[in-house]
Structure formats: C-alpha cells, structure tokens
Image 1 (cartoon, rainbow, N blue to C red):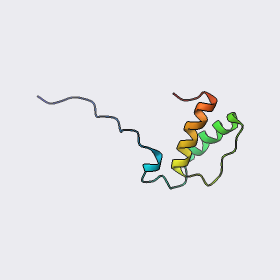
Image 2 (image 1 turned 90 degrees about the vertical axis):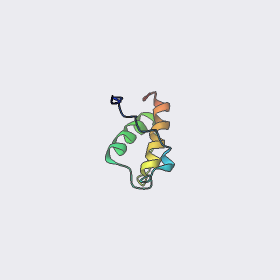
Image 3 (image 1 turned 135 degrees about the vertical axis):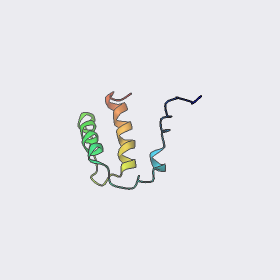
Length: 68
C-alpha cells in the first residue's frame, strides 16, 4: 500500500533566517505594505528588504486588524 497523505506545508521560518531575506522587497510586498501603512498612518522606507517587509506586514496587520 502507498501512503496517500498530502505533502506537509512548509514550516514557517523566521524572516531573519530567509536565504533571500536581504533582497529588496517584492512588488506584492510593496503594494500590501503601502496599503497597510496608509491605514495605520505610518511611512514605509523605500529600501526595505524582503525580511523587513514581512516583519512590518505582520506588525501592521496587528495594528490595523487585518490578517489572521
């Protein structure tokens, strides 16, 4: 018999552990981060990395009530 279980989801990694974390944030991150920042009445630096953007998104989601 074969095991037909669904593959495990990737475990969530700390953004500081990301291999590409020091690259510039993605376009999707930039867009969402600016939306959240506008709602939270805060500014987003333009030189944010992928890892920093992820952490800022988490913080701003909590502040604005968005996210899980």
